[in-house]
Image (cartoon, rainbow, N blue to C red; front, side, top):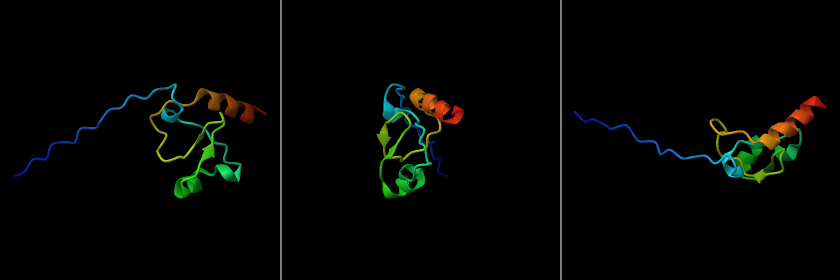
Length: 78
């Protein structure tokens, strides 16, 4: 009988001041910011805070960008 040890998951510390380590909100009303096609095509989108990035990972478990939240509140409240 062979016993397989569970894999150890490498824990990384997320820096909430590093824009690459946080979740950003993207206004997808602009066709240039379509996250799904950006993932497939490997192109940049622009977050509400102005940060430009290529989406490639799930946002779950990451802190949310407060400037994006503030900008979203202005859009929704308008």
